[in-house]
Image 1 (tube, rainbow, N blue to C red):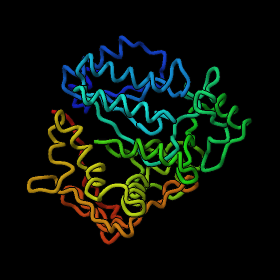
Image 2 (image 1 turned 180 degrees about the vertical axis):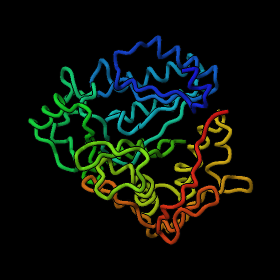
Image 3 (image 1 turned 90 degrees about the horizontal axis):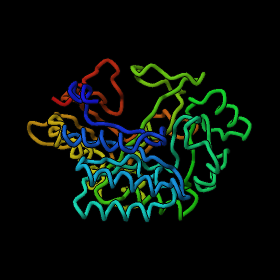
Image 4 (image 1 turned 120 degrees about the horizontal axis):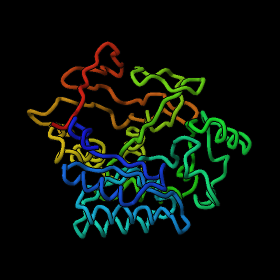
Length: 333
């Protein structure tokens, strides 16, 4: 891990939810290493469950305790999906820890569904469906189609790496679910993140990571194409939950702010000012909308008229120029 940081790593990521039996002392020790190197840690909570023991609440308690005891900057990954229906209690303990000086930041994405491999440990073990709030196997979809119990069991046994989408909240159909999602999306000081994942071809094989632009029939989670336009459409234009300025802060300045203390290059990101990196997005708030769906997740958003990266125009009048690649990697020095 130290070698990776020396090579320019932006922080240390922990997928505790995918290795729930991993050592707590090791987790604590590597957070100490992060604090010594002045880099954030990024944690996927150890548990995904509404039932104790080994609940989501317990997973968040662990992250808070480690941040408090090591002094490391703890960034909590996808507050929305990891909290299940305990967001009220979980947001309360995070807020109180922040008030007491614990260095914690959070992010969330504006969907009531997550995506991962069907063989993940959180979808196994005793009473796993009850632990996730009574989720049914038909709440898991592949290319937008709900799985049958038989297909779920077959994929988990024979193709555990298959990327599926799991629907835990229905914000479009149930007001109580919408309120739960709002609580995580609008958490004070939070960032909006896509939690993007692998894109698959029609044979369910992952595309090469350099494939650009994505084919229209690529399969994945719609958050990979629609997160930011969906957030602007729903929370600013349609429901007027927050101001445009606050929304832009959450999608641009806040992520840069989370990183800028440890990654000097981020001090020139997420803001429009002389000497910054000339990364500019011009959009029409009355038009901007997500077009990606669970059935067609790769459909690009509309309303983004111009995109300039490092001073080079990438999108002009809504049309992507695939011949220019102005982006540059970011590394810690």
